[in-house]
Image (cartoon, rainbow, N blue to C red; front, top):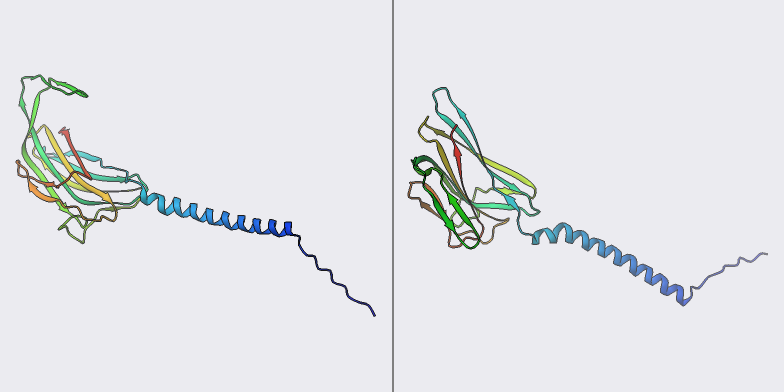
Length: 220
């Protein structure tokens, strides 16, 4: 009658310590990988400042009767890693005329910038178009409208403006946007005001998050 022998190996103290160290190392590596992923994908982007550009693109086409059609594309490009939203916006178009054909030399000097200009003077003389919007991110704004842009995306609004033939050699497009990281909390306290030329504009108690542009475009 045969006997079945079973051999049991008992790990040494050193082997037990090594096994425990390996388990701790594996768990720590997993936790570190998880933390790194969460930090890079979730925590870090939320701490970043928004990055974007607000180009205004103008296309023009002349009709047979001489009327010029301007397609004004109010574009917003989110180039950052956080979502952004537009709390309020204003855009006005003015016709400009040559104020005088006598060249006038003007100078502007500061410690950091010096400008000399001898070109023909221009000035806005007529309001052609003006629009202002208070969206959901503004105090008193329309809660049902927003201009929300996820990271690395873009969108635009188009406006068609007609300019009488030969009336204005230049148009001035003035744009103002109040842009914040989404969601906008607290809301932006901006107010709608009238300009001296009869258009609409926005005024806030502070300039934080305000982005302005004023560009001139010759009528061809």
